[in-house]
Image (tube, rainbow, N blue to C red; front, side, top):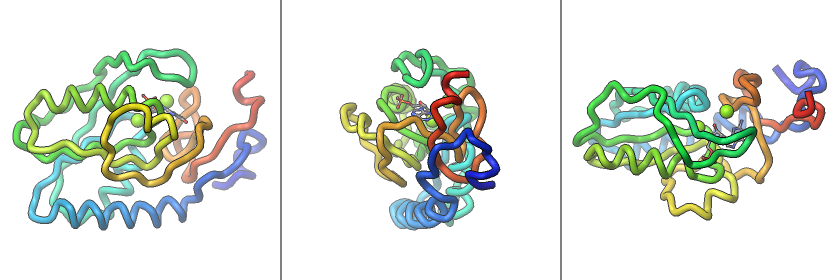
Length: 184
Ligand code: 5GP
Ligand code: MG
Ligand code: MG
């Protein structure tokens, strides 16, 4: 799929499938080096992180298990509020485990800082974060994100797991939407 298949919905492709793949190769190499000799619990935050989970986990050689959480950040439209509700909790007891959270994007960082506090209260051996994308606002919140794929501008992006109104998650690239999409 490319910009043309999207009809007129897409404004611009910011990151191609190939760029994403190359960056995931690099992230996976770092993670493998950092977790040598350890067993990892890879936690995907639904639904946005499904592509990152699938493509990052397949590049990792570190022994791992996977689990999923679904959280909902109260807020309207395209901004999150930091008030978070667990829609689906982990099935795994993380006491003593090395937890690596896989995220699609960190914008305000509010969702993630809530998630980190929640998971740390469960006494894991460690908790780190790998995110494909990070926006500039994330710097305002004091969350330590060890693995970052790309720093992107403060624009609303879709694709590669990221949605607008439930759509566009299946795009293999990351892009921005044309103005008219937000008006319908
Ligand atoms: P934060 O709490 O860091 O502001 O936002 C985290 C969540 O908001 C992300 O996991 C994602 O679901 C959503 N989000 C933030 N920025 C974007 C964006 O540019 N595009 C899309 N589709 N979702 C975003
Ligand atoms: Mg997310
Ligand atoms: Mg969304």
